[in-house]
Length: 102
Image 1 (cartoon, rainbow, N blue to C red):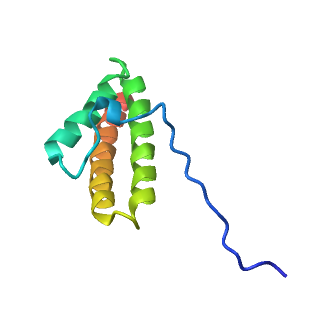
Image 2: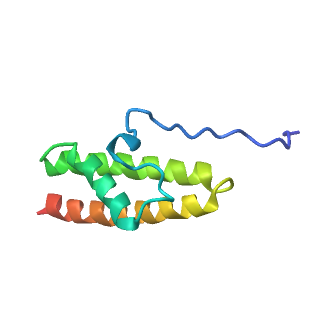
């Protein structure tokens, strides 16, 4: 008979994709514009290639998703802000994908 205990799911958060290095930290104190500028600095760090920027955007979206999941019970307000930033980055990725398709 299977056990009724929950499995522990670990969310890997890579330290090499650290967003605080580019100014994405203390998000409760920053405005939407400041947070978005910090995220765009991360994307620009990938170089001028659209393909490289799209890949970097995907990594940032994954990182933001992991941060939102980790914080959703302990700090729901922060989690909501991270989710909104994740949606912003998803829209940016859609624009990059359209440029790649041309």
